[in-house]
Image (tube, rainbow, N blue to C red; front, side, top):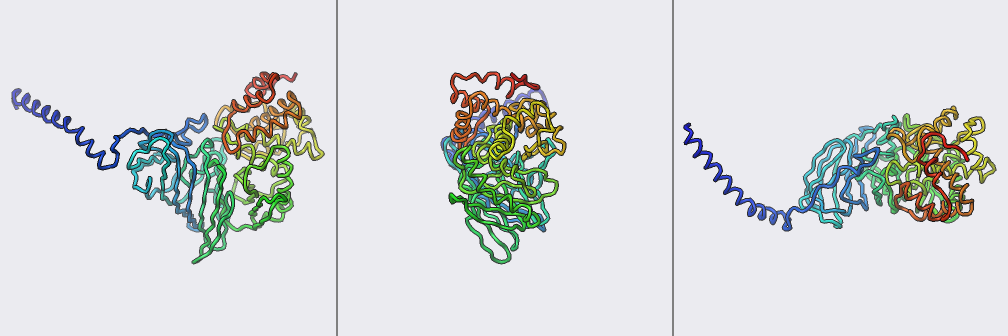
Length: 501
């Protein structure tokens, strides 16, 4: 081809491109009208995480979930789960796409507002592209059909959660990220929602979850259970236990429903402690204010290598028969952690420090050491005078160490409000030094104002989220004129062992 031919050919291509460019606006307008997007593409994708300091990919941006409707069928022998999750949410921005957290499992179909949506997977992120952009403040429903063999998650500290198989079924636990192994959602504690869970299992097995049992029916060799959780719940507090259980139903003297499910092998040892649930709640209400939920109870189930209890909402989970101290800890979490939930995983001490301090108060109120004596023993490293009753309920075993001295030695490893990594958010400083911060506040304001602070904090953020800055501001507002600077700087955020005045 000659140079002249090349130039002519090039000019023709330029002319063709120019004509195509002139056609684009008209074609685009036509396409948008046909798809129902007559306002044009105006949204942007929601974030694939909420930038949590320890789990940056957890949760998603651009929307707020208000309700989960989960329909599940599980066959333990085949280890196969089939699920349909309908997530109702409110858009917090104009959305062209958004993400759900889902670990493993096969996605079969996704719809938004009843219309088929495009989707793709990348790790734990399920990205959904609705047929039509979602406008800010609009409520929308996304339905995901999925199936497969749910897995487990191993945390940075080595603990396990997710879909944990047992000898006769499964125990599903979520702190901090395990819930994404069995249903898609916005899996960060900052986004709380109501739940309706319908579960079908082989006849002879039970399915126990949060909230209240609304239905139970058996047909064609399977039993279906319907559970309803009306109060907002962070997804890490959702649970599902499938297996053979001894079930007990009762009510507290105030009429609160109590539902306990216990592995038959643990029933004899568990029964005396679980009977004390009404007593513990009555005591807790005097200290912390009205119980924040519409039912209570417990699940005792043995999952291999679990090693921790968890404050699952309404119904804490125990890996074996609990003692009364651990029961107090988990029930105290219903106020501090479940009703008042952390804004991020950095705020874990607001869960664990409060629940540990509840143990100290229980002992003080029942003829044991005072909270101040427990504080003094920890500060003095006097392990012989400290029984280490602060049973860890999260993803670490520090509080249950056989040698309490190990835990005492590590109390000063880092400040409770600033764990150094995701692997440390359930270490001893978060529990014990967190409780010590509360005792320092009590020393400063006196008992009468301190009891008001405990109750007021639970009331101020009831069914919501809070962080450390919210707590310090709340305390300062309740005790004007008091100087808390040294407590915050030395005990809450300070490195090493504070000097004792």
